[in-house]
Image (cartoon, rainbow, N blue to C red; front, top):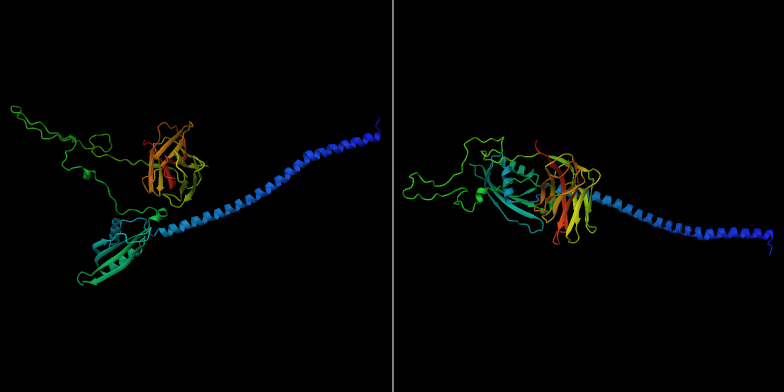
Length: 413
């Protein structure tokens, strides 16, 4: 059958239309559907982004408000005691009378009279003999004290010959919960154990004491030795030579420390060894030195063999450029716990060292922790992170610590 030219042209046109139709329905339509789906997803993602931006703005505002509230609480709390003892009260009362012709004749203290939870209230009744101007000077010192002390009652009588005689009743209040917002208070009263006072018995012989056997009849007529005394050298001690055994006094040499990180920059973040562990690292106005410390909060959620919260140094590496002997860190503990604290160091050969400070926290408030650096470390080295760990299924699951003043000491020349 012979196809005419006109039919050929129609067949060619029909083929072209079929090709375009196949291209459109097989390629263009799926792509258009995909574009429609992507546009819908883009709209949803944009809405999610806008919602997250709003949350971030809200979070920044909340962080700012929290910081402002913390500063306000810290300012208000600085005028109150976080802890108080009768010894501190006695020393404070006596301190106010310094430089005044005021004699304290007697003092009595009451136990905690507060029934309110979280508040401790003591009362001190103080007898005195003085003159009128000195009494006003004492009250003025009391009023200008950094911590608020309430003068709740005062009685006076004129003895004419000895001046004014009277009694003051002062109220001291403390709130242990404000310890997190105030600097540790300087203790006016301290104690030091004298090892001589803890002997089992004062009649026990000293080390090295011995009793000689009684002399037998017919033996030498020389006097028996009653007891052996330590052989003390009569040569003068040499303070410049501590190895000299003639020096009976042990010298304590204070090794200077160099600060390598002050936690002012805030270039650190929180990392845990398990995705279930929650935590954060933020700046805190409660510091040992400088402007800020780092506050690390964590929740181990559940007990496991090892739980670890880490403060990791981010942008600026913390380096120890030359050989050092010890590394130290100031830590503020809000409560005692069974958490271990230490640092992880990577030396110049890439070897990792885990240097523990403590296996458990048996202190509260600020405490300087110190550890010897391993002699195998090749310097310079980098402090990668500070870790807080819980071991075993009885570990404490939550914690909050303040970290400040990372220091090292170098060998003395």
